[in-house]
Length: 201
Image (cartoon, rainbow, N blue to C red; front, side):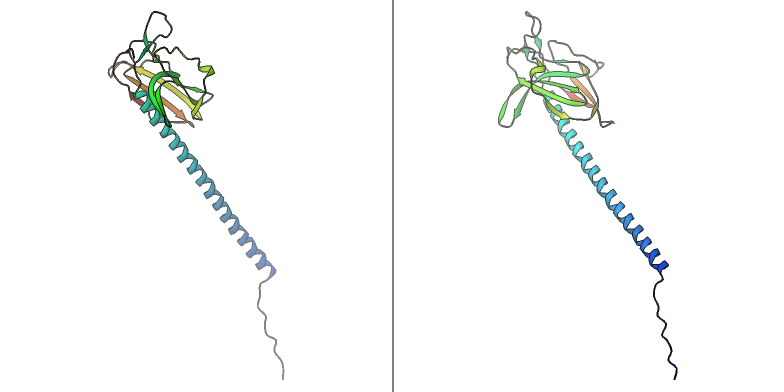
């Protein structure tokens, strides 16, 4: 009686290598997709954080500038009184009430951009206040990566925009701020200020 050999089925070495190669490619594609997803998530979170920061800063500027008080004080000329508001296309200074934590009062604010950073300085205001020496006052960074910053001013709704607002008896009626951050222009910020001429406190 003859014994018959059973045929043993299996994978050849070539099939194993091809299978491992395909598996490696699938794993590489999966890891690449996971890494891309993680990077995208970080970018989205960073963008949302920047948008939130920008929104908060714009909200602060709208509130503070809209409440700018046309108070009078001796500025540069000994005998003249002027509204404590002065601005150029690159910086602006105004007086407004503010609350910091539990402390509140009226402050002189100074807004400008230095080294692509939007900076704010402030000191308490009093009737005897003179023009502060901003170089010696603490600086608060509001926004970074500010590639463009332009401020302009209007006497009223029908007037042309001006690049400067010098000492006068009144604040401007409107202030416009054009801001470009991270190479993206933000919508124009147009703020209506309190009406009224400078008054003695």
